[in-house]
Image 1 (cartoon, one colour):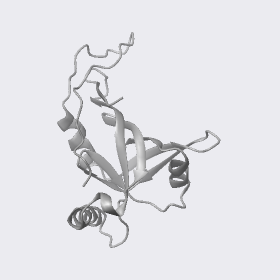
Image 2 (image 1 turned 90 degrees about the horizontal axis):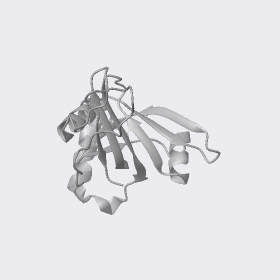
Image 3 (image 1 turned 135 degrees about the vertical axis):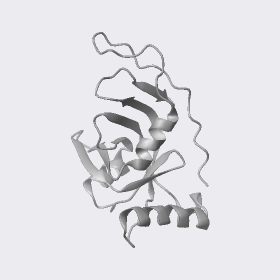
Image 4 (image 1 turned 180 degrees about the horizontal axis):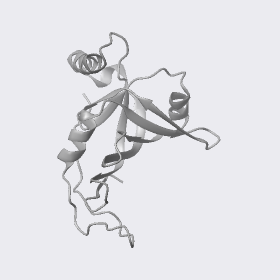
Length: 161
């Protein structure tokens, strides 16, 4: 079983003149969880060994306050992550925003019980109406930024670092 993710206290973003950022946290973790669970797709950004950026949409599910996603180890993004696990993930919404910076890794078979694997696979297969694939990649967050609306007045962050 993956350990329960301990969510840090929300913080306001770093002040930046002219951006209308709040001085106190405006959102709760529930906003993050709701947006991530509701998303159909997720954009992941990785960096290759030469430092060149790479972004690609992937299928995934939000469970246990973590993104779990699937993909062939032969894809460019997977090869990038195997060499450098730093990742940025977000749903494709520019107004109800959640951006997760963290580290992606593959799950070992023994990290989840048979029941937990079945639940995770069931969520994934139901969401995408497929019998193939298993979300065996997981993102461990380091920083999450979120805001609700076109303006940045609700930006809130959570830091594990």
